Image 1 (cartoon, rainbow, N blue to C red):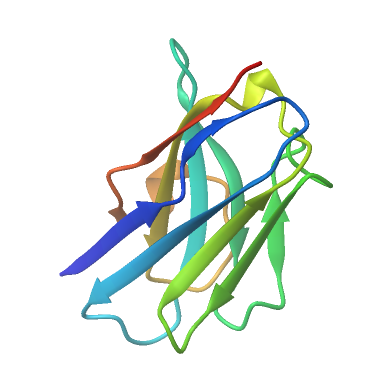
Image 2 (image 1 turned 90 degrees about the horizontal axis):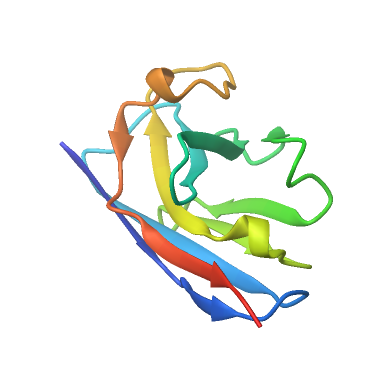
Length: 124
């Protein structure tokens, strides 16, 4: 079993920055993809970013490209989401996800484990 725990959410003004972290624990071995998703109030959960096992390949949603950066520290089993130039439209619960397989994907159904989420509010 794998456990994912997000942290770093909070309230920030438009144009501000936040960095989310996700710690993975439990049975973690082999090749796996880490991703971030978000669910805004009243909307479906959507893909934000994903990163390959070696950290070389990244995938971003069009709405976050250029503002958000995903990175990972495999020694700590941790993945980060650095968010800059935040907009009110970025307000959402952010979820960390893990996919035990090769192949980058934006598809929510392709991820095997999920965290409980951390709330991000962008407001003046």
